Figure 1: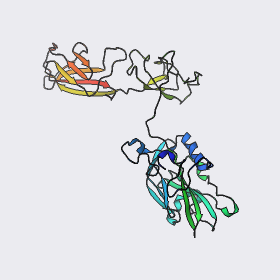
Figure 2: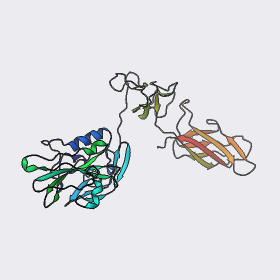
Figure 3: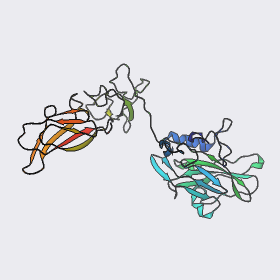
Figure 4: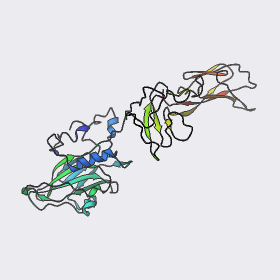
Length: 363
């Protein structure tokens, strides 16, 4: 398999002789995993976000890939999301004929798989079970005599909880149990980025979707304990919203469906830009001084010309001298530079200035 997305489409590894091709039948483990992915359960391919890693898109390196050597199944390390919880899966090698691994078969009464003789086969599934030591479990179905024209069926007892099947293994007979082939059954949840297109009301750009989404058919919010995240231009939310003209995240709560700032709890809340507070201290002796901040301060949403910046000048020694300065009169702001004016007329001799400002944490 060339890429991580081809696990169900093409088999090119020595231990695989089939994937999910056009003429194939969907197997129950595949359907199970597709259903689980609909519940946002699956393997998280962390390396996809490591753009400099040559294996970032590999279908066989890491990410809980399953291979085999003789009767030993090797599971690569990876990360799995199950029922809203992340689980780290450590690399493991499990000999399915070794009595030391009976605990890996909880749904088979902790007994190892056997086969009666020639032509007999079973299907064994490798799946994630956080309740098992190592979090890797296995289950096998009933054996059948393929010489009679029947084929082994996948087991289903593991479906009593949410899980992810990593591989389906065909067990064949060769002086005992042997591994015929291993089929990749993983489904993946991309770790990011998550693209969001803005929800737009072309007739009134200042209106939030209010749970009407694209169809303009009004939904049923408020519903207790429900809400949704969406993206839109903050223009129209308040007097001078931060991020106006850009696309930012919003959360529609379950309590009200007000389009703008609600008068009661609930409604559409702007999530980004995130307001962060930082403090910058500089020397100030009464002369005009420029102080360069790490980030550009955000503006007040009530006054277009006012930035969320406070400046206090003070004297380090005694007697103590402290004065709070007035924005626009005692200091000005241009981009990331705060200019504290000289000769402010305060009684006392300052030595320092402390600047407290709110920013969004980005350039």
